[in-house]
Length: 245
Figure 1 (spheres, rainbow, N blue to C red):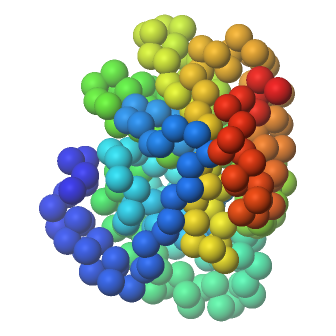
Figure 2: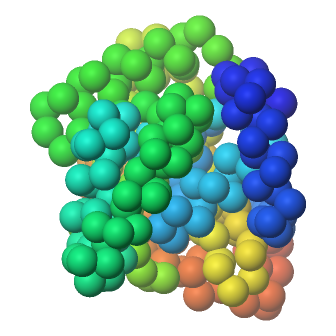
């Protein structure tokens, strides 16, 4: 049981596991470690649910601030942004679905103790809350950096650099050197492909421009999206991290 989740919430998760197939994890390098940053595609609600149910480490999600709002704010976000703008469902259907989904989703994000992210200067709040977690625990962070403003795609359209800014602040101000893992969830195979990790200190030496790094990660995650068994085998036998190539 995750220590940062409540007992009732863990009980509810046991029920959900009955109806959700456990994903497979394939590692191109080292296996999962505590106190790391994990970057993943989103696949709508699929990846957050899969990771909450089956990810074996203590972690905190980053997620949009609307999901930590009032029930009315959660309903508005689900109906107008998530279901309509991102999932491309007709608006009148979104209103109906969101009436049922909003209370459940509010409870879910309260249960996982979501760390709110913002599209503006309020990201300083995200950084402050995340830093408190990093300084006082061995929790990892699960971050979804993809630009999903127009929907969720198998091949990502953009990659936000907030994870780099957070890791840089932790390293320079508090000497916390996060290993950064890139993961891609393949829906058809119900499989997470976990790339070789790289320490932030090493990443920062290779390239300290966070937008350029974000673009490199975008290119890499889309490479992994197209991987088959042969590609995976080849990568597992190649000790070099993609940033060093």
